[in-house]
Length: 363
Image (tube, rainbow, N blue to C red; front, side, top):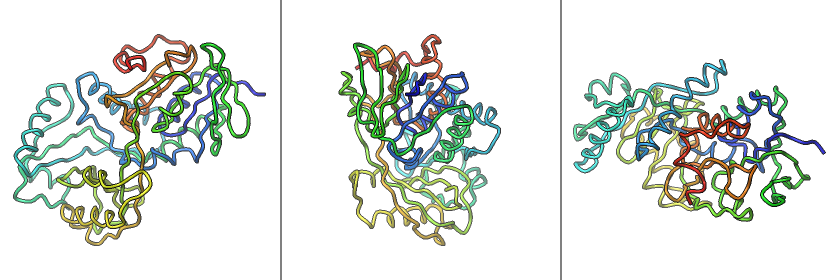
């Protein structure tokens, strides 16, 4: 039976980032996933890289460092992994939302995050296809924001990890974890047991169910979200846009990716009324008229993890000497950062002070 330094359970963006950094540190790694790597929550995320609504200050700074980590990753990889800069735009149309937006922009700017209020003319210079109505109050531009083709990033990172000796086993479900005292000794899959010196769980919305048999009850809820994907509009969209009632961003194939918070409340993990996709498209057409030429290409439901206090959970599992977990609602934004920090901890470096407020033992 082959023995690995680290078994990473979960091949989404967090697992892929951690595996990549572990292999770069010279560790032998196996990555296990019940499905195709990158096909779960990572594929069904809006994948907006940002720290715009992340509070309090410590959580904002963790996310802001996550945004910055992408530029460093691009320098290290030196190939196109679907990372697209350009910032994001947001505007309001009612008094309450306007007050919140103006206060948030001021707070972000004070922290050093690239956030500013801009004129309608400046916003349209950035994104000429938008229809920002006369009832728009304040418009914010966040210059450092970006988006990423998350499945592509997963493929690139895991491909590079494999070139360094890692094994990636998609379609390999983990059935149980074998422990002795405070040690994980093996991960039992549907194709046999995997033995490793350390195990990292990056299983997103399955976190609570996977860790409970190990004596760790983490309050991680499952939150479904609906995304719609369109064909290409008459004029391409250049960046992430958050307009009243709709958020949209470019899709790698030239179309648009759409979502809305109020629409998410109308679905379950397994079902969404069929008309909701057309609702999202109609809203997009109102704020981005070139989308009138687009058609709905499909909808998908993504189930996202939400820790009980809304904040990232990252670190060693208290009941295990060699078991670690990372789960967050902001996995795309913080994937490269959290992957690097948790990999460093697994290989024996001092735990990052940056993760101190976000350890599993706070629960």
